[in-house]
Length: 391
Ligand SMILES: Nc1ncnc2c1ncn2[C@@H]1O[C@H](COP(=O)(O)OP(=O)(O)OP(=O)(O)O)[C@@H](O)[C@H]1O
Ligand SMILES: [Mg+2]
Image (cartoon, rainbow, N blue to C red):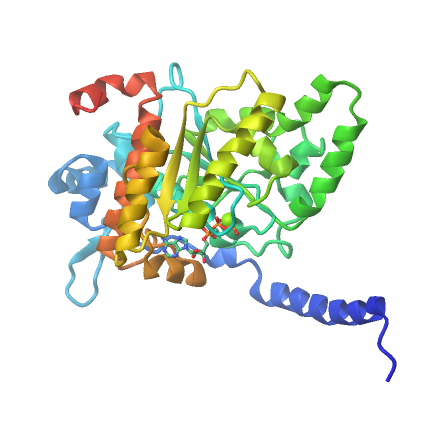
């Protein structure tokens, strides 16, 4: 039999699979509309989160119009409050941790490394959850065409998310602000600018756009566009988190220029470790060319996928410290089955109805350290950090 021409073969595959995708989309509607934060917080957890004791919270329920915590029908015990209710308490008792708009700037943090599969998206998603549970206002911007982060927020990229729903609406000049593409997520406190495959295709269009510029200054400006876009919406937030693609391109360079600080996830393997050194060499070259005046608040390597069962990994952490010195977080993101399951079930460890306390403790340690790096940059938090003996 003669071979089928490639175009015909691809047309066949596409006709079949696009039909399937469409049906799936129609059937499922938006998973986002079904996704909600299921975890509830016990009265004692709530007390700790709000910074007031349980009795004070119970007394404030009526005054605030907060429904009493959901009860277990079997034993009538209070199961817990929702995060929205906890936020209402925090607002009432003035214990929301928001930055002071008059003196603290929103912090734009990129999870970036050109190496793939090192935990950029995992760090970005779980740190967003951590911050939102603490009560911060978070904007997550997915800039990776693989759209892992977008999926974790319950969207089906490409079926539900189109080019004009992403940062491209701004980078392509369709809007003069990023505001129209910011969407509320099911997770109280987290907004999202989603991604889809169009970001991958857009790389070429962006390169052509750069080639059209007539001066070096105008060419450099193309790399600062995301930064300007973020400035149009950042006032609403305490922290803006950027998930980056595992590649060097116009979008990832925009991320580099947009960020105030970099978290550089690096898997606890020798190969990844040296590729992070290479990453630093490359970004040094590009920042020098594209934004020589740029400053970062901090740049810090985060050791990820750390498997404590192996001695060599323990040594690896020492090597990381020897190599990156102060520029590596002390805490390490352990390899945990819950994290893998989380991405398979689209429910992160912080969202689980019955979370694994050990995993949360590990992640609280990692993210607490990054949170501290943020707080140190906000003048309004100085007195509090001082009182805690941190600075
Ligand atoms: N701490 C962890 N424990 C177990 N599995 C993890 C952990 N962190 C990440 N993973 C898994 O490793 C894989 C890669 O993680 P992730 O998608 O976060 O990396 P990435 O750097 O964003 O990848 P890419 O470069 O493709 O965007 C995923 O399957 C994820 O579930
Ligand atoms: Mg990723």
